[in-house]
Image (cartoon, rainbow, N blue to C red; front, side, top):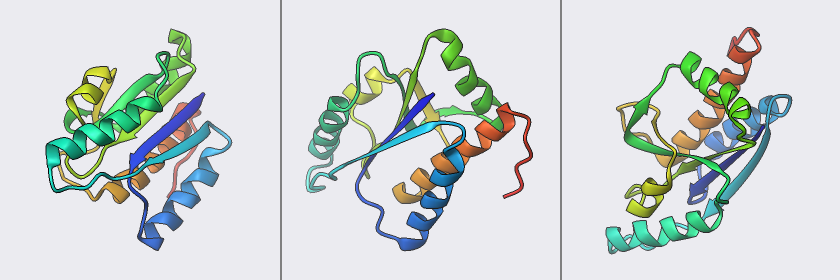
Length: 153
């Protein structure tokens, strides 16, 4: 399966970039990962920033993409449920899962309307950079669970 991660902004913290690099390597045997960064909009007007970022993200999404947008108020899943849901996608004719980590102010209404799933990592609020690393870690964990392989760290 092709997994795309679209995120707003750059990863600035080296330790987060290192963690992401580690999980990219770990994911290679399981999924083809494609990553895209969208420039963060000027935050002087949050509504405009969300709309601008949302438009940029939507340009990267194909009509056939199965889209999950990370949203604090979205659906909570256990790692096991995440694994089952991802593993079912190819059986439903879905070849590409696209995951979006929106910007500081959240996802635009148009982006949320396009989402097939609104996914919450936790009711807690995370830095967007951490959310990106957590998504990669959870994708790796889900792949290991799906193959009944041990996950130690």
